[in-house]
Image (cartoon, rainbow, N blue to C red):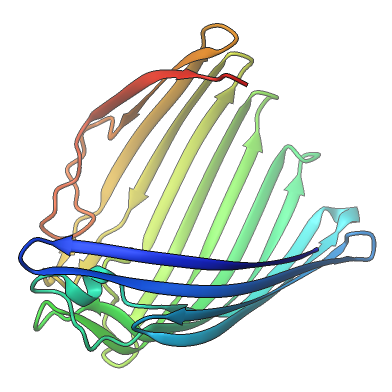
Length: 284
């Protein structure tokens, strides 16, 4: 299956008295998926060309493959690719942080993984190893508090996931990520990247009602902008909806159920216990 397209993006930002600027990005992309040997082997390739107003032009690509050993319900998958990210408006212009001399980020990345179905497809286990290498990664310089490029950085880690279908209506899932993220020149940890992250969730989907709950643990992270570790935190969220009649339904969600006090960025507060709700009307 061949897919092609074009993209135009215009970003505008304004900070009264400091900056009022915009940047444009034009892109062309091409992707092809090929299935072989009765869909046991799937090959995927992609190519993208970006022309950014301030960061210049760059061509990136990605290739991947998945092999399904159907008799034992085991999938082997892997990919390799390159990436490109231009500095954002905040990276360039935000007061006391922006840096007009920034270079765009460039990355190379690869991963390899296994996915195994067990218990007659009632459960799925997956394990993935990945590596990403950055050139000119954009981070906060702890000496100046300005956005700056890190010449060489590396992120590598392992992701493990499990999904269990308890009944036709109830699913539970769990996932763990171990991350080793370092500045290759200084051997220091990269900012705001936790070494450990764990999540657990359960969902119920009925004819007229759905319920969900999730738990997330994030370990401490170093934040170069404040030159300290951000403490680890636990977060519990819940959500649900109920279909009143054919068209209207009510929905709601609770975020940060136990009112955890945590930071995602140093010195910036996050919402405490919060409740949201509403009515949704479907006309089709």
